[in-house]
Length: 282
Image 1 (cartoon, helix red, strand yellow):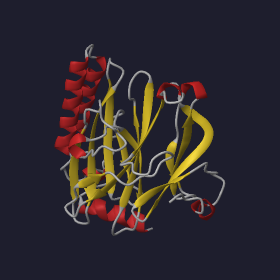
Image 2 (image 1 turned 180 degrees about the vertical axis):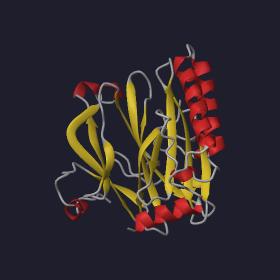
Image 3 (image 1 turned 30 degrees about the vertical axis):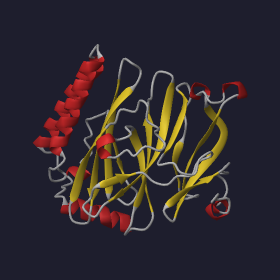
Image 4 (image 1 turned 90 degrees about the horizontal axis):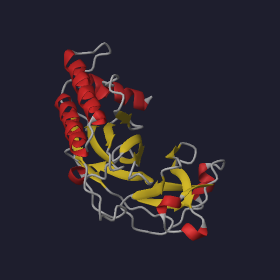
């Protein structure tokens, strides 16, 4: 009930109307779709990037309009729109496949700070050569992914958001990413957390790389109150080569507690959350 009340408050404060289908948003959807289609059909990557950037610019112009937090942009098929479990954070992301086999990403965060909606544009960093699990990547040099789930951890006064996203890294591998974001008092996002993984104690985010022929699950488990995903593995002769990694039918979990994310090995999704918490590795 609290979540419903909060969302209702946000929509009222932002001037949302159930029947709202304004000319502004209609025009934005039409112009965005036109640019995106041009990006899809362009025969070289420079044009694809140009049209995708134009689509992002068009969308950005609408994000300070009244009612935008609650508007679903229903005619934009290529736009991922997710709202956090507490109803305060909305994330819009999209990607465009390039001829090189990689993707280019654009995104926006809309955060309700209790009085107004703060909008932040996300600009993708050049990932080549970066240690993605440890790099300091903020809104102006963002990791770049299509986010499909946002979950709040921590208390309502100091929310910590976990973002699950997908990145079509190249023609051989895909990535899933688990990212943390918090917001400053002025509504500015701050990416990065303290993550424990299977082989490291000090990750800024968790990046999972696996063969593009496989699919990896990574999402919030309400019962365990943790992010749970497929454990990735490879045959002994292919260890260390992400092109041969894929799910091995076991699961790992990541549990937030006291400002850190702890690794839960070999999660049994049938167990109750209090049983799993006893396996937390500190």
